[in-house]
Image (tube, rainbow, N blue to C red; front, side):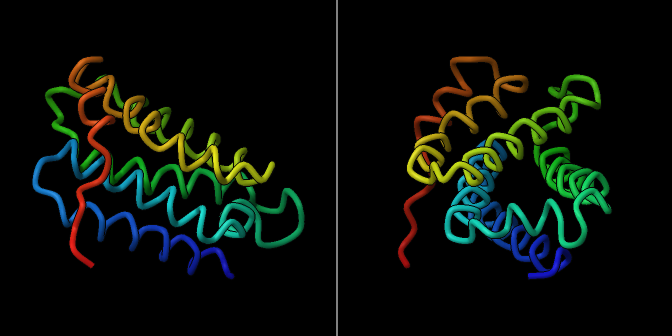
Length: 146
C-alpha cells in the first residue's frame, strides 16, 4: 500500500469515529480507538507509513507527516484554552505512534488492543487532569449499532 493511501485510510477511520461523538473528549477517545483498531487490522500500515522505499530515503518526512496530521486532529478537537504549549500535541501523538509501531513490529497485537484506554488517558491527561481523563479512558468507545 502506498504511503498517501495508507495515511488517507487511517485518517478516514479516525475522522469517522470522531464524527460519531458529541463531546470532544469522546471524539479524541473514539479517534484513538479507531486508529489503533485500524493498525491492528492492517499491521502492514506501520511499515507503509514509516517507509515505502529504500531504508532512510524519506522515513523522517513520513513520520513527521503522520505525527503532524494526527496532532492536527487533536489540536482541532481539544479546547485551545486548556491546551499546554504547542509542542504538547505533537509529543502526545509521537508517543502514541511510537508505542503502536513498536507493538506492531514485535507482534504484540493482543497487548496493543489492551493499550487503547491507556493511550486515551495519556492523551487527555494534559487537558483534563488525571481523574477526568481516567473517567474518559475507562468509558471506552461508544457502543453504536452496526
